[in-house]
Image (cartoon, rainbow, N blue to C red; front, top):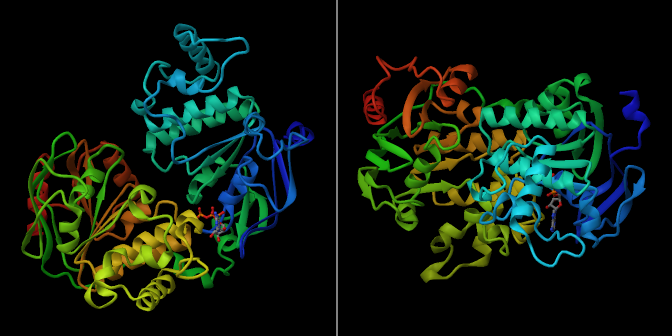
Length: 529
Ligand SMILES: Nc1ncnc2c1ncn2[C@@H]1O[C@H](COP(=O)(O)OP(=O)(O)OP(=O)(O)O)[C@@H](O)[C@H]1O
């Protein structure tokens, strides 16, 4: 530790100011990460975390302030090769080229002096050596698209280290990993830390901050609030620093995590009959009633996401039917799903969720344009009014309905996607990992909205592996390898649910009888419960 303090910091940023037009994204903030340290940067959506990452990686030139790596001034903005030798960020969105091999990705745009053509066998050999030197066990001739998420992250980390970077920024690295993947990632990070590599870890999962990091910095509304040793800071104090609310005032952020079962459950609204997608999930009979929130839990590739996408019309099933409020829905068609009353909150908001060059108001009302003016016209005033209501009820941090969604932070973009799904008053709401990238306070607000939609008589399905998302469900079905392997009423323990998602101990504590049946029989059983 003393040795760590003596060496110049891996990075020290001081007095950093960054404005986007009228928005002050960073207001005189600082950050210091020591060699070999794992440092968490946390804050609510829009706090300024991504903006700081962009400043630290040379993508944004700050309006004021300095950045130094290992005591040396940062390279000139624009000299990306020089920045690459200092720092790298592994983003949620992969930066590798999916069609290229691991070796090609590692040596993309990197020719040795005097090299006139590429010798593939030599390239693979160099890649093998490079990966081995960081203890990364990945085949250099594999295509990047065939790698598991954490292998891809390891390749990106190895690539960054091979450029000489001693500071790696991880942006929500566990977002797409299952429990075992997370453990493997943690082990790799600890190994590299022991070799002096520093990590800056951006995450909305506070438990991960406690599991992995030694130091934490909190930003709030573009300002630095505190930097503390993780061991010296309770979770309640951390949340208080993030929200700026005293312990009493912050009660709403966990208000919905436990709910009573005193709400009315009515008629079946969503029903599937032997719905199947070959290679993804086996035939399932699902039945969700009005007032009910049902969770479809499962790890990566369990089939839960595919099932959610089929329900929303994004993918066509191989067989079976979807029925909403007694009417069959034409499957494999988003417009038909929408017409039938299925509202959809997609997981990948960048690809499926938003039109980035359009305003918050336009994005929030995309699905209800027909209701915003007579004879197919859209009245801007009505659009603004509608959007303003959504902004208030979902606490979207924006300058106003006219702001382009590109200018919103990631978490606030997610809220716009949710606003759009709710705009049509859906009979059935299908939400895929609805709180991914959303801060702790907004998370509960969003989940509260899902409960409210159900409370008003709709049915809701939450597809997720996040325990917080699943906690608001009345019932959770766990999928594993395309089959429902367990079903729980509320009151499950974290351990049993995680175990079921990992395929351990296929039991149904809350259901009547054995669990060996197929997904179909499990679904049938629910209808009678
Ligand atoms: N390109 C941009 N144009 C205009 N405003 C921007 C731009 N990028 C960020 N902002 C604004 O700067 C502020 C900080 O955003 P930033 O993305 O850094 O937040 P964040 O802490 O990373 O949030 P999240 O957890 O939601 O990702 C927000 O108010 C955002 O609207």
